[in-house]
Image (cartoon, rainbow over all chains, first blue to last red; front, side, top):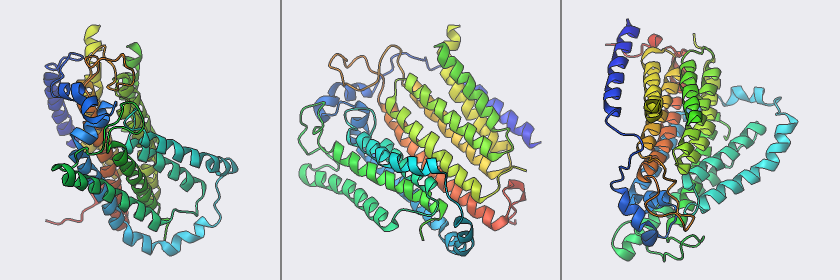
Length: 233
Length: 78
Length: 119
């Protein structure tokens, strides 16, 4: 009974999709708002990556909202799983004592971990020159920490250091926005000098904000995995 | 062009297969493959930023979070 | 044949959204329902990017001085989808933590057997 009704609903929605998508031509030129951003992007912000200048300069307030949503999700996860971690503390200890990862994993992860961190840092520092940015670099840093969690079943990161780095990075983002308010009258204006395009020290506040976002997202996702595994006491 | 058509066909078949597996680890691995093919399609649609984000987050961290959650609950769907 | 080439990305994204919706409506295991939600997210992201695609133009990064400002694709949908992917993974982590707590309380993952609410 439930299957038949849901299939009827899906057929109606599919008919709606067919009718809507036939009105949108695929591959035709439909640029509307973005013409302004493409024409004046390099001159007004100094970043050669137009997606970065849209995310951080023209629509910077939405990025602040997204960082807030990620923070609230990590907070909610830590709050929901908190009581469970305290109750299970005594039970899981006996299983973990005899388990060790294989030799290849232990040796290889020791070599790969600093290289993965270096690669993630390269991606979020060069966010305004090449494809990349804070969120991608943060996810790569979290993958590096996940590799270390898999290779060593009894170690975990220092939770207090991770919390301090995460909070300071979030405050740096909001602080630079407030400095823009002090200097130019609008929140999150680009008040540092623009520089020569296509060099590393260019485009004002964009590299600084991306470094803050990269560190914050990286340690936040690592904190999510640490809370789910229940490692650090 | 024909390569993109083949990838889209494989992606739809993998998504249907993910709904039919009884072992939940198999379903999660197939969902990671769907994310990977979506990341390749983003590259063909001239969007390198989005392809990098989908590959790092969708095919890496999502699978890890799912497998940790399966380990704390049951593995087989009854 | 060109009808297929013009509409294959719409079929991909529409197909993923419909399969994800079928999994959410019909399946009874909680973790499978969360997998279905992930499929809906991925399908919508593919749809947003393929609306902003223009044939014959290239990625919106002016790393080469020869790239003119009239030969790049639309950068605004890419900025929106970047936000959407990160929010998708945040919602997924929160949903899975709630699933773990529900399993602790009821010892089952079947949606039809969880009868905590009594009318």
